[in-house]
Length: 273
Ligand SMILES: Nc1ncnc2c1ncn2[C@@H]1O[C@H](COP(=O)(O)OP(=O)(O)OP(=O)(O)O)[C@@H](O)[C@H]1O
Image: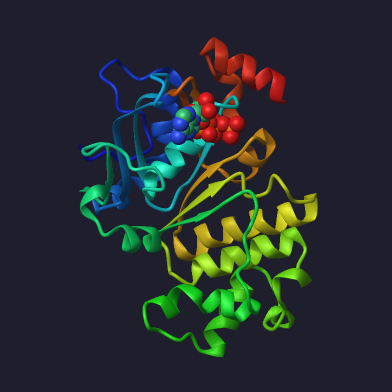
């Protein structure tokens, strides 16, 4: 099903707010028509080993070049959805498609190169920052030039003095930007961000947010970001999915979150703001 915008795929008519969203992202229509959809998620379900439902049928299209925020109460399944997109959790066949291809049919390493991920806490490998940035390409037999490494440092808002630093010389915020540069060295098409700034101070948070916005504007990067901060989502996301009990209950523009109608979503928004 070719859809021009992020929307929940459903048989019932779209809510007023969703209709509104469709208009907002109409500019994406041409891109979507030209293979602009990155992910299609269809009836994605997960049940824990103990038989507890975790995801209850997620249906959503994620267009190229959009920053999609996922918010919702703790335990609602946000990280599980994110991890399905690069097979850190293996979704069932026929539920997650990248450019129309079932991700189970893709080589998992090449999928993870295309769909990079940053976590709450960055893990810096042994060696220098430059070694870290070269890590992914080196696995594929490519050696990044110094110029490439400096370009990636700049993209992650780090100056050239970081080139020779090691992990224990970095603050958590700087380490997160190194992790970002290392991920970008794989030239991903999509970035999955799982609360990437929750351990960072406000300035480091702003640095990361600036990078995300820059990557979207300059590279057309598609970003799917889980965040607990509604303010952050409002600063950088184009659209927000509200996840409650393993279901997307609303998809809204960030500045229209107050129009959420689902009672649990409303309660969550009230308590979070
Ligand atoms: N492998 C697993 N086995 C059993 N339960 C799991 C597993 N993975 C996740 N869960 C459960 O699934 C639910 C959703 O977890 P998930 O981490 O996706 O939620 P979340 O919305 O990201 O939560 P938080 O905001 O607290 O990070 C939670 O109740 C969690 O305990």
